Length: 235
Ligand code: CA
Image 1 (cartoon, rainbow, N blue to C red):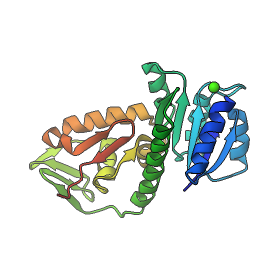
Image 2 (image 1 turned 90 degrees about the vertical axis):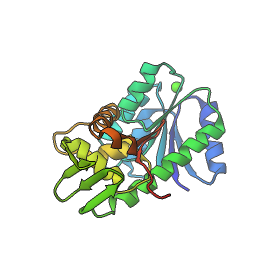
Image 3 (image 1 turned 30 degrees about the vertical axis):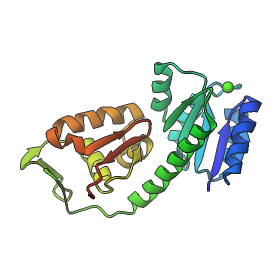
C-alpha cells in the first residue's frame, strides 16, 4: 500500500476518491489546489503516486504542476494520473506531454480509477527492480541480438544503426522482458545532460526503433495507456 497525493478542487470528487483509496488501505493526503500541493511537497513527504486535476484554482494549473514535478529532484519519478473533465484528444496529448503517466476523464468509474492506481504502483515497483539489474553482455531473443558492451544490435545477422536514445530504450526494456515501463520511467532512464525528453518524444523514439528493427520490431510491445515492454520470451 502506498501514500497517495490527491490534488482536486471539487470537494465531492476529492472526498470520494480519498474514501475509496483509504478503503483499499492507502494513506491519502488531499489538497484543493496545486499551490497547496507544492507546500506539501516542500515538506519533503514521500509519495508513491499522485492524482492531479487539471483545472485548479490559483496560479498553478494541474498541468503546470505536473510539468514542474518532472523537473523536480525528488519527485520526478513519482507516477502521476491526471484526472480531468477535459476530454479532447489534444488535452490528453498535452497531459501526457506534461509528464502524466496516465489520464482519466471525468466522470470516471471508481473501480477503473483504482485499477489504474494499482497499475502505476506496480510499474513504480518494477522500475525500482529494473534499475538494480546490471547491464552488459549479450542478449538474444529470436532474430534480435543486443551486444551491450559493444553497443551493437543485429536483426537476423544484419547490423542495425540505432541512435543512442533508441539503443538505451531497447536495452532498458530488453533487460526486463515482460515488464511494463511507463513513459516516465523510460524518460528517467534515458534522460541525460542537455537531453529533454517528453512522453510524446518517447513515442517517436519507439516508432523509429521499431522501424529499424524491421521484423524484430514486434518484440517492442505497446501497452495502451501505460507504456511499453519487451515481449516476454518465456513460453
Ligand atoms: Ca477542477
